[in-house]
Length: 325
View 1 (cartoon, rainbow, N blue to C red):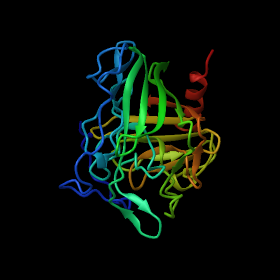
View 2: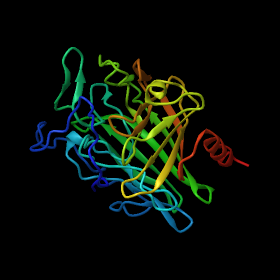
View 3: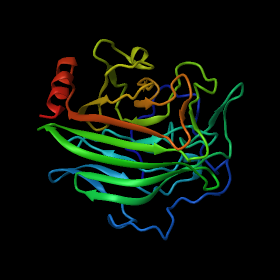
View 4: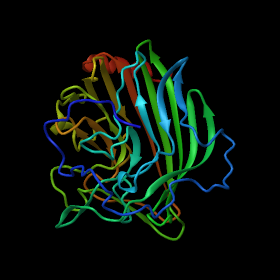
């Protein structure tokens, strides 16, 4: 799986990609679910798709064959508008561990499930042998417009940090727009709390509180971002706005608008447009989050995927059209 080719951005996050041999050594943890697990929802070796009618709008890569340093996890890519414009990127040269639309956290009780270097307080980004995997274990439902499955968030030795139930659904909104819904429940072991952190909570300045539901977009040039009452990356990043919009043009043409909703209690938006195009529902933007022993963390996010560039009035119309009747 490769990202859609596009020019490299002029600026880079201070966590560069280093090609060549994997600096964290060989794979030491399982990348596949337990072979004996039952899987009644369908075959376990394919990448299912989500459809609106007979149009494929997203492909779900369930078991990516990736080096541990890239944070192997299920991800959506390519996601497309109804007209076929791609709106996600995967394995981009600037941040190879950015994988379309996915759930990923850089610090889960010391395990890096995001990929790339780990941010270490007073040291900065450092290659460490601390990468885990988010592994599919069992399908619960498979249909053209919805998918549901069970997963495990594992450390480098295969130990289970969290279990997850995830549901994805695609629904039509307008002739040129559709909605992706992502619902999940993360459950901690009964014997310990599980702490979720980010580079920001581990000492990095400049609002780098990423980690959660992350969407790596693709754009020819810098996209535009805005909320209901602010404009630009600086205003959106770290905010708790009801929604964040990102508009851009895909490489090769095709304008699009993405509208993100669904912050949970304590979540914040992490937004990048200059370094790269991306939006994240950040779980630990400026302070660690905790899933208590035996407890749950739930989330529900909706992304509206539309053809064309929408302004605030256009976004408001999309949101109204997406509301249940």
